[in-house]
Length: 73
Image (tube, rainbow, N blue to C red):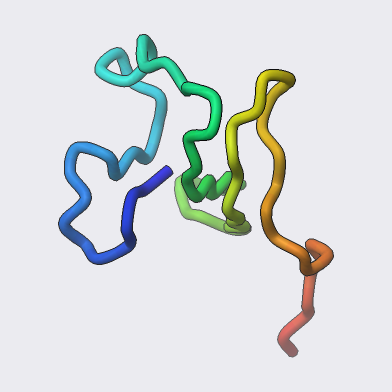
């Protein structure tokens, strides 16, 4: 997840759930961008992201576009 997206979001810019962030609580109504990454051979192969808000029953996606893959040939 990251904060405002301006490049000065430390310590909110998180690439993995290391020990320093595993205890963070995600409170109701908090919103952020999450970007799951699929890696192959140590390199990011697929990156997709969207804004979410935390609800009492879990995260709710805020984006409206359908997630889909596009082939670039």
